[in-house]
Length: 187
Image (tube, rainbow, N blue to C red; front, side, top):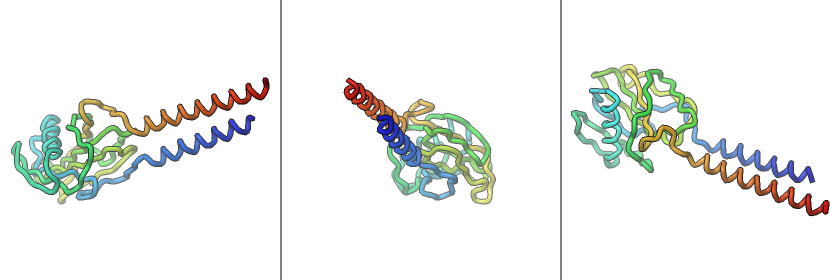
């Protein structure tokens, strides 16, 4: 009977490992890649509230279009992402290496060399771990970056947590059945 319980536990461990392997991981973002949401020319002023405005403007644009507003010129990529809730400021940094942790961020805004180039915006929904962004764009250096979360929460619920909960409940039920069978055999 113990072999049966160990067998169930081994299967559950393998399934958990498979779910961890399914999490999207990206090691580097590049200008114009499939994660690009768009570009803001020039992205100045570049305070936190301004960056929220710029990202939300790009979110509202049709694919492959350009627009002007807020003193900026916007270029929306042809990349489609869904869902795309409004951006909410989360944190700033200046290194080309960014630790996304367990995820929960949706957008990344990177400003390149003040008034000389512009700002690249990527959709990073579902990404976890550490990523890198270009140190230069258009020949200009990275000035800093900002991460955004959706709708005012700093750690939105991911589907993997729900999957693990379902898996844990399934494991608990299998173990309960094994214990019930053993009790019935002994009786």
